[in-house]
Amino acid sequence: MAKSFDFQNTPGHLVRRAHQRTVALFMEETAGFDVTPVQFAILHELLAQPGEDQVTLASRVAFDAATSGSVIGRLEKRGWVRREADTRDRRRKLLWITPEGETAALQMRDAAQRVQERLMGPLNAEERAVLMTLLTKVVYQHQDPAGTSGA
Image (cartoon, rainbow, N blue to C red; front, side, top):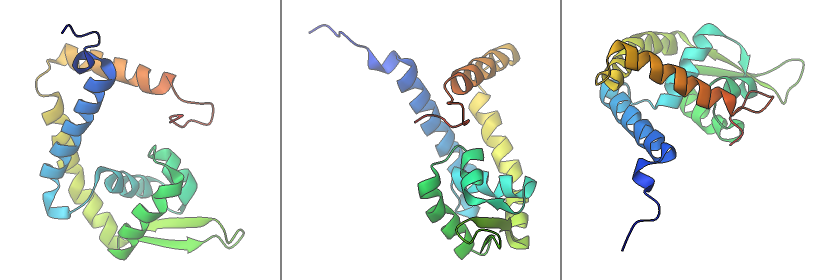
């Protein structure tokens, strides 16, 4: 029976497989930290923007705001993030990275860089630049006006 749709060679499938590979590499490189890529992204953003509100932070790391609370809760339980209600709006939760969280995030940066290098390893410099240009275009041309993925 002839294939009418070769899904294994579609952009969506290949992007999903590349994501799986990226996560696997991340988990290998950060095994000693027991952290997910989203948790690392949250910690990294809080280094840059301490006191960020939970909804804005979720948007900055391209993660669903409704489920970010549980991810942040796990970081809070580990003592890496501190969450407080905004004094002007008690519904709004503000986040800070703790000294322990900052130490962990800074230690993980090298591992995160190794992930990128390993992922791009099969490509030469020109191919890396082209891939980055194309991925950036695909991701950011599909954002809605609020800056989210639209998913």
